[in-house]
Length: 278
Ligand code: NAD
Image (cartoon, rainbow, N blue to C red; front, side, top):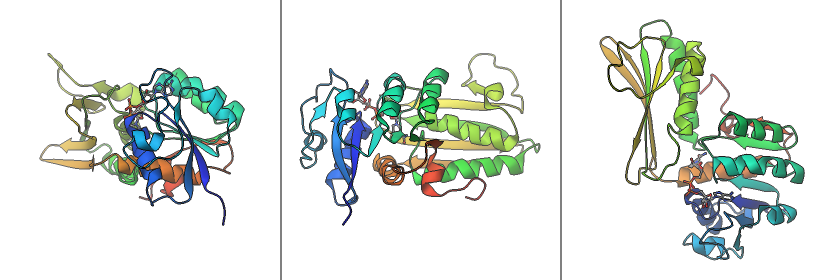
């Protein structure tokens, strides 16, 4: 029997880190094992067992605050749900350690994304703002819809809703949905994106994609893409009811990535959803 894939979990004390630890403590992923768990050096959960801290059985791995020490230990793949600046700072260290890297962290700016892309020249990297099967199918559907509706008077707007603690807005998933729509329309997202509207915003031009971020309570993540024309509105929606769908996607990626060639991959690659064929 082959040995399990050993995972280094970064952001282990966070909501996603704990969801992943709970899954690793359960029966669903027998081929994966937690090898190391890292969080901020001042995390209150430092020194606790990563499984127990997540409310699951002990996994025999304590949460540490030392990424470099964890990278020096044996792991087959790193799974990172931390903070945009932390993931960018980790990029050259992941590359130097030669560890395949799943980056679930969102909110990366241009320079931070460039750091991840640079690492992907040396190691295989999966960068995905949303790891769920449903959302990745939605990306493909939105692109297809925009292509079909192009030039027919349909206004595209994206509404996302998340829990009150979410740090970035609009969500990384909303921006990717915007990219998918822009691609279908044949536009460049940065030329057409607008964040919400207020005051005398004037008549809406057709060549525009509006983003609207709602924050409240414990909403895991809802995304709706509207295509509104005179007389009708098409809405393509996804609702996550639990973080598990995202954590399961991350662990699928962790099982898929080791042994791949250095490159920047997406969940479409992991899930086998080829562009244009949802
Ligand atoms: P969270 O705030 O609950 O957890 C983040 C964790 O990272 C915290 O425990 C924090 O202490 C830790 N952290 C911060 N800086 C660190 C550092 N330098 N080194 C190690 N750990 C560090 O947030 P969350 O809801 O778990 O989300 C984490 C990230 O993942 C966010 O960017 C979020 O938007 C993103 N996210 C992505 C997906 C996806 O499917 N790709 C799904 C959910 C969340």
